[in-house]
Length: 248
Image (cartoon, rainbow, N blue to C red; front, side, top):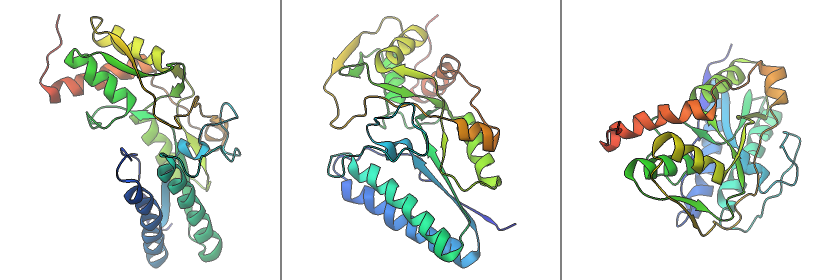
């Protein structure tokens, strides 16, 4: 069994203003790690993303779907960077025999996330704890699927330790509109806050939901933690770090 090399580019950052750094990190970083894996004979895991599907025309999204990505949009540095990273992984696998694993991660949440990283779950929870309005990007009907971090880690370990190259979707197929997510956060964390609509991000996907058939069949994996069970665990962590106690 070769040693494992975990190449974990899990977190997508705020790409505005650092678009070149974003795509260079994905492409050059992947090349560097593949070179290392080749030298030491390691198995390497790339945490890719549901963003490779772009604004999908197929719903839910299976791994066989090639995606609908705008290659010149403001978000494309991340989307296309991950697509190139997957290409590099398979080219090294075919040409050099590197053992690769590729996971396509859908929205993940949980304790110890960066509080102000721009992700929708962390944004809503931080806003609710601070007593600020929850800012939902219009139209509010766009959907996402949220996977709790412990479920995500379990899926990644199963993929890394198994014999399937991937790509394999790792995500929770429970689908919520942004309005529904905001309403859940409001109900569970701070019923007094308002929900405000704000301008949308260009090229924001209208829907996102993983088809996890392959994960179930090949990895024996499916998520266990429901959104309404995971949000309070994240709230507790955020309250500790923000220094805001929960009112009785």
